[in-house]
Image (cartoon, rainbow, N blue to C red):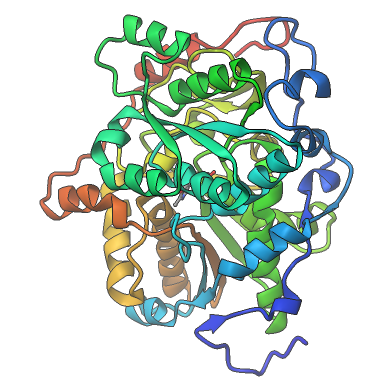
Length: 463
Ligand SMILES: *Cc1c(COP(=O)(O)O)cnc(C)c1O
């Protein structure tokens, strides 16, 4: 029951019986639906049959479902969620005090599981449907390693084989991530590799490349399509992933509703858009239905600014140009961002759902530089105790900035942000920051033009 007068605890939990039993599909409430995936050869919308060569059947159905507002979470997934969910919604009293702000700050902490991020929420769903279809295994890519770790855990639980293509620079920088994945039984290959046609081609064209998410996706798709009983799974960007991640927003909303709290501003970091899309989903639903209004802010790195500087066009989801085309804000599939330290945010595109919502003026986007991100991360770690992932710290940066604006104006706004994960595997980045060796590379317009030049050109897809 809403009770305005009750003191808000540091952590708001939900009882088991209060946990969501259905995911929320924001597409059902969107007037302008996200554009469909296109076949890159014919430029016609991908059919379920075409998609089922790559993805498992139930996930294809979810990918194409723009109609059903709620989709049941299978009992087995609900049971798995209970092992690490609900994730805490924390009132950042200590941060508020440190900042001296009248703003009320909350964060939803998704780092309380071994994978260290929200990615497990979708990994378990995707592994469940693959198993239910009788598949033998799945392939995927991983950048910073959180998705690969989450998928390895989910596959171990479901009894599925798991082949992970890990972006080479992360594979080398984060050997312990790789070891966690292997502990859960995954087979991990640095990408680009000699094990695929597309990997050999990329290596021939860019000798010595340290890889990118886009390259790793191409390799993982090639192996899935060419191996009997395998399908490909993806940890972000897709509609199905945002659907699964709606658990974050549904729990957040249920917890806030218990205390009658309505956020003014909701903030999340955006790589492919899955945590932000999930966090804001039920709030965006209210906004779309005209019931309530919220400011929703996507935060991206200045070094990989797909929403703030990208083009809203059809583009490939991968560097090797083997995937379907998605209409999204993109920097071009051959854009390789400077090696900044938020690996999970180094993707050239953005979820079609968030791209459409942003295009329609329903959310804002901003970009931040990495030294200011680490400054915020350090302040947060020192007062709130949690060592945040660099990705998550993008949201912390903007939450602090908004709270400081409230200090100037005296407004008591309620700010909610997504704290997507922990930074234990990012200590090389923290070391750089602590040594004063971190730089802020921002691509020039000329740099971006190179990526834009690679966007496929066809009628109706002018940039
Ligand atoms: C992957 C990741 C992100 C970014 O991915 P989205 O799909 O945009 O949510 C953010 N934070 C962490 C900790 C991640 O692992």
